[in-house]
Each structure stands twice: as C-alpha cells, then as structure tokens.
Image (tube, rainbow, N blue to C red; front, side, top):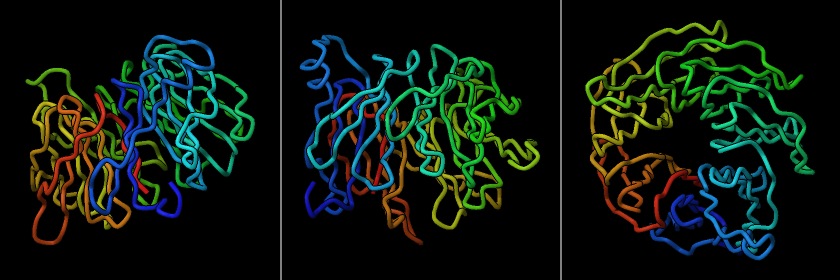
Length: 316
C-alpha cells in the first residue's frame, strides 16, 4: 500500500476468494488481493475458501479473514498484498474479533457451535468453547472483559468471560439474532433480529449490558442484516436484503425516519473514518454503494463494481 495506506476500504468477496481494496478518496476499486493462490501453492487446495468476515490488527498491517468453506483464518500482509499464513479453526467460521488487551483472536464457528480462541502472537489454538446453535456475530465489550456471541439458531446470546476464557451465562435475545452493534458507552447493544419470512419482518432488540435485560424491541424492515450507529449515535443505519435498502432508525424517536435504496441484497455496512459516507455491499450486484451523509441529505452518490458476492467491509 505504500505511503497511501489510509482512506481505504477492504471488501471480502466470498464468491471469488478475493479482497477488493477500495480507494475511499476517489471511490474506486484500486486493486484485488487474491486469497486463493496461497492455498493453491502451499497445500494444493482446489476448492473455494469463502472469505466471510475480516478485521484489521492494531497496526493496520495485517487483515485477518474468516474462511467459511475452509474452516480457517487467513492473515493478509497489507504491505505485500498477499496471504502470509493461515490458522485452522472450527467448522464454518463466521465472524472474528481481535483483543490487544488479552492478546487473543476470537472466531465464531457456525457449524460446530463453538468459539475458537487463538493466541494473537503465535496463532496457536488456546481453547474451543461451546456456544448456542449457529453462533454468528461476536462483539467485545468496551472494557474487553466480555465477549458477546449471537447464536442465530437458538435465539440467544452466549457471554464469554475473557479473563478465564469460559462461558459466564447465556441469555435470550429474541428471534434470529444476526448482527449487533455496541454504543460508545458500552452499556447498550443494538441487536438485529432478521426474518426469513417476509410476512414476519425484522426488528431491533435493545439490550442493557449491565443487567443483561431487554429494554425494547423495535420493528424495522423485512429482512434486516447489519446495523451501524452514526457518529453522534442519533440514528441506526440498517441494511435490508429484502427491500434492497438501508433503513434509518431514530434512536430517540424509536421509529424509521428514512430509507435509502441501494443495490440488490445489501449486507455489510460501514462508515468511512470521517463519518461522511456509508459503504454498503450488495451481494447480488457485486457492487459497493457509496451513500453521502450530511445534515440535509442521505443519498447514493456512486456505485462501485467489486468482486463476486461482496460481504464484509473494513474501512480505515
């Protein structure tokens, strides 16, 4: 990346085993990082690996990627633009989190109903913890003392104590918990409850992280997927795969205040570092929608072609 290693977006393309590197100043795909070649040259692998989620390390030098079809985590050196190592984890890894404080990597394994915990420095597996059914998104608490694990198949959340790497408790969080985001204060989780039935619709569950009590449930959209808070935590932006839109939910009013139409089957969503633009990956279009956010408007200003089946977005 050289001296221009800033204002970049990384998009995991699940359908072609690549990472699109997007210039967030000019909004175009700058290049692609091939993930598959590492596996082909090192172990002769011929099947897809399926990159699903990604996270940057604390120095922004390495990108850690879960590979759902390969039960592994790839480590991409962003200076060399290539995979430099991989770790084995559980079956169908979905999401990943890195904790500098605990020197640990956490990976949810959807098919093996478990959480893998690896040593961040050596990449060695420290332990595997049982979770609920189909663990999906994971999120560290603000103080890094807890790890929240959403279990899509059992409609609950497993809470991991990161000091002892063991389960503290499991609590119900309404049906089909798929994604979540944490407010800056760390006391409220906004959980996206998706819907696999258009008639049922989706919702947002507000969970108090101190007492682990559900404070509210707000109906929103048809098939919500991911959510993100804006800079001042006034609105929650939620992708909706069925409506091909981003729903804007007012936190104070607890109601929908806007809907922005994007490409087909939007999934992942991320703000640029200055919070002036939203990035939305459209799985069926193989595109990235760029939404301008200011006081007077929310509007798609550009659509970028990326790789096949774009999933996770990481912006710096």
